[in-house]
Amino acid sequence: MNKEQQAVSAEKLLFQTSRDRGFITGSEAVAEAVKRANVDMAIAYPITPQSESMHLVGDLYAQGYIKDYYRAENEFAVMAAIHGASLGGGRVFTATSGPGTLRAMEMFPVWAGSRQPIVCAFMCRGIALPPSIQPENIEIAFMLDTGMLIFHAENGQDYFDMILAGYAIAEQPEVHLPVGVFADGFFVTHTREVVDLPSQDLKLDPYNPDYAPIPPFDMEHPPIRSTRDPLLNKSNFISYAANASWHQEVLAAAQRAKKHIVKYLGGLLETENPQAEILIVASGTAVSQAREAIRTMRKEGLDVGLVKVKSIRPFPEKEIQEVTANASLIVIPEFNPGGWLAREVKASIDNNSRVVAGPRVFGGMTMPKELIINEIKNALSAIKVNS
Image (cartoon, rainbow, N blue to C red; front, top):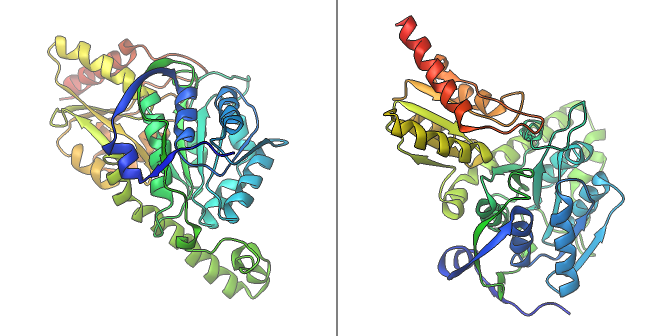
């Protein structure tokens, strides 16, 4: 029997209802979002640090909040089965982490190419040798060109809100793309903090696949052309033209999502003191560490602003250009060895010499505020010497 909840619009659930404070972990915030998401089916496979969240989602199934749930054979099997459930017109949810993301990688562009509004939570962790289960978000770099929308949560509140908003954004007819909601493992998933929650007696209005740009599979709708071989077995010209135009449409759909991200998430980025000549640009947990560094630097008389990037795909190129136009120094702290966010920022703005790609920590290392402060002071000293 399904749990009795009142179905309401995303606007009402996210913005117009009162909220009560809960003191919960990020994994519990994921489950609380799924509890209110009116999910038809969830499929799980355990991997640290994601396991707890999908265990809790399984409890939701037992309590009647989800219509169907099971554990699949492995991460690829999860994403393939979620693909099938979404093709059938269901609202679906799953989650994974680190090596699980890479094992399932083939399915993510399939989701996007099939225009499926799947929401998947990613709890980022190390994936390199020597093996590490510790926090690190290098997997976001691997996901950038899959066609998915990508949001990066700073904390449990972001995680809760972004998952619910993810369904509202993904299911817009002109968008209809999968959404990956990422958080830095352990720092968010296993940390208990205050999260404001709407009543558990409310849930999102059900998903209506009749508004999808591609009809769901059923007895009256044969499989869509892109899932069958004739398209690719014709001439090269037909194959190139069909695939090129389809990829362009996926990219265009991501751009069309921007107005819905502004509506449901308040924008692709947030700023604090954006007029400052020194700006820290960060996403995820690095934002929280940047806030601490800014508090200390202000006491020392340094005027520093913050740019929190919430949407990684679509990336806020124009917004980044505008907010950094007058900055003389842009520092980008990251929890990964490659510096994918710094690369994105550098590709978006002029005068890249302003950008300091660091500090970067990985493999489970923490980022004390002093690392960010020292990066800024060292950069200022270098500017002074060269001027």
